[in-house]
Length: 417
Ligand code: GLU
Image (cartoon, rainbow, N blue to C red; front, side, top):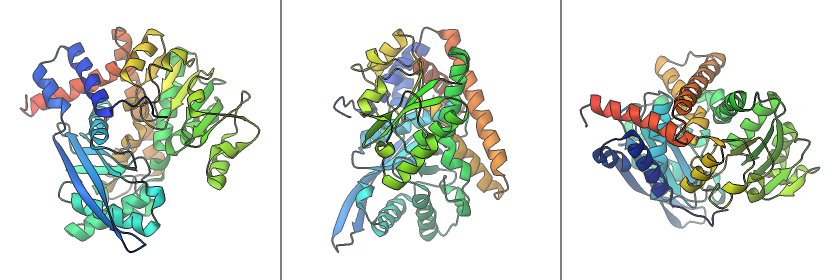
């Protein structure tokens, strides 16, 4: 999927430059924002089950803290690089600012294929990574969460390791934990729900409602699967989904419950049956109303952007569209709900969970979910009206411009600029 590789950090910097120029901000502001405030590299040795020690490399990039403590996930993936983590941390700064959360942006990662590790090896990897970072994280300093191939179990090890190293047993040092350890069930579905909400709101304004619209989703992990579930509950037709093994397509629509079941029992949606097999690449250019890239970066490029037929693209993944593709889509009148808005449901629910932990865990799931929906809808409205007023810029530049304005204002208030 990745022969169009474009370094994510250079993409993030290009996007920032475009925003700085658009807002007419000083070169100095660009310099302040293009580099993370701090990047920590850690060495993570793990005693493997075969008795040998393997050494993995991990990072935590802390991009900006003007609006509050750094916030963002940790990914475990064989292709993780420091540049990728730096880019993702910058996007987290824009995401939290756009949503009006009291956070800056951070991101972590380890270059590892966690699917090849045993449960015990994974635990040791996670604990050693967090121990190495323990001086740089904290409830008011930097609050990690899951990302690609990490989950609530990894977060439970993180809290426990933090307890061992610092002596403080604090739920709020990470978010998206198991419910018994201060997590909330809604966090699991929150990113997918947020994607679905923004797609629904965009469809209302641009196509006249979500009912009966065709939706194609690349990626059937935590984000894509729940986006499919909510959109189909609201009357949309899920015509195609895929995962790392490939995809399935059916003009009459796929049964989402059955997709969940096939994925759980057989490990991939390709075993769905009663549907045409398609590739991840083909899925992107299907005749659909809404397209949801919910896998990895750099999948919508200048090569396939001219063939995309969707009217709305909701970015479940972080960074799925390259800057060149953005330009093409904008020219072609395709509305892209940018990642920092479309997939912000996850971090927004993290904020609710973190606030709840600080208050002693008394919020109900209903209250949390209501708050999440409110926040997503109001961020969508703020973005949409800003973009509609400006029209001369693409929706990503509009969303990032809104976010950069807030971060710059906070930096001024703090006397940084
Ligand atoms: N990893 C998610 C993201 O990219 C969630 C981050 C969080 O909850 O802090 O937004």
